[in-house]
Amino acid sequence: FLFTDFEWDDFSKGKMKTINLGATTQLESVCFLNNDTLLLSDEKRGNTGGNLYTLKLSK
Image (cartoon, rainbow, N blue to C red; front, side, top):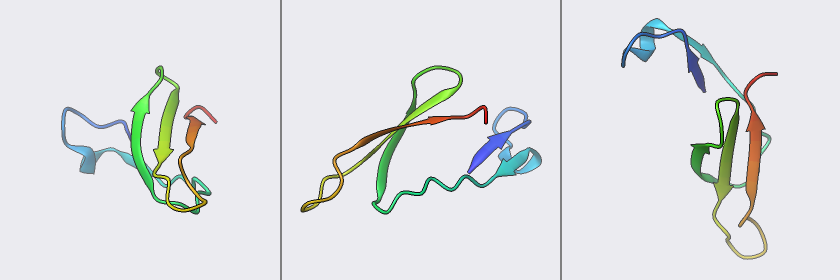
């Protein structure tokens, strides 16, 4: 989910947008690269995972 237009720590009074990441693995971490780009990673398990993804928030 992407939460916007909230005040302080009251996310429930803001807007919530569902984002389909299209991932088939379990994403383990997220951090901001800049104000518009997220970095996401998944855990390596067998022959899948161990990847780093980027997501632009301004679509």
